[in-house]
Image (cartoon, rainbow, N blue to C red; front, side, top):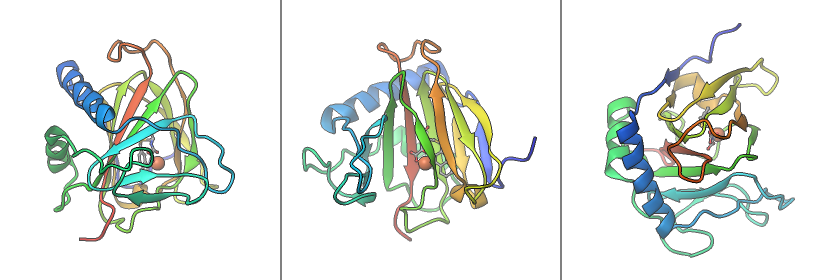
Amino acid sequence: KQALPDGFRYLPDHLDRAAQEVLVGEIRAVVAAAPLYVPTMPRTGKPMSVRMTNCGRLGWVTDKARGYRYQETHPATGKPWPPIPERLLALWQELAGFEAPPEACLVNFYDDTAKMGMHQDSDEAEFAAPVLSISLGDTCLFRIGGTERSDKAQSLKLASGDIVLLAGKSRLAYHGVTRTYPGTSTLLKNGGRINLTLRRVTPI
Ligand code: MD3
Ligand code: FE
């Protein structure tokens, strides 16, 4: 069993049930203003199985015509993204150890069949800042390798309330979500899993 990439921090059960419930309420409000949409892959237009939205000044989006990018508006409504909830900004301040606040919060929603293939997060112009990830709802099997696609990877389960911080070398590690485990959490009334990622996008 090899080491996790340098800079990877796993904080299991960091958020208690009450904090998770409040956060879900705030994410529901974000989704009401900026509905989940089906992202599609560059060039092929193949739909991703994860549904997405964002809050913050910038949001990560993808579609067939224009590919992966950050933009200031929702691709379907054309409206600016809603603001990042204060408690998420506070969590970043507490854990990220980075002087500037996050600019983007990507909201990923996984139904029982959704997954995410192995990829690097490289659409940001600022890699000095960490990425902070919060898992809510059903447990998933998360996979993380090294900075080369061929590096050996290892799996770990992410449960509701778990936080992962990707700093240093781990910021450019390949990672993905193999599967979710339906019925493993009662947090979301209709099941599924939500992942929030807080990021810097532009240099300070
Ligand atoms: C490792 N999300 O949004 S979160 C993504 O569970 C993404 O929805 C997954 O990969 C999810 O890009 C994984 C944990 C995570 C997030 C960002 C990372 C791991 C990462 C960035 C670099 C390395
Ligand atoms: Fe990612």
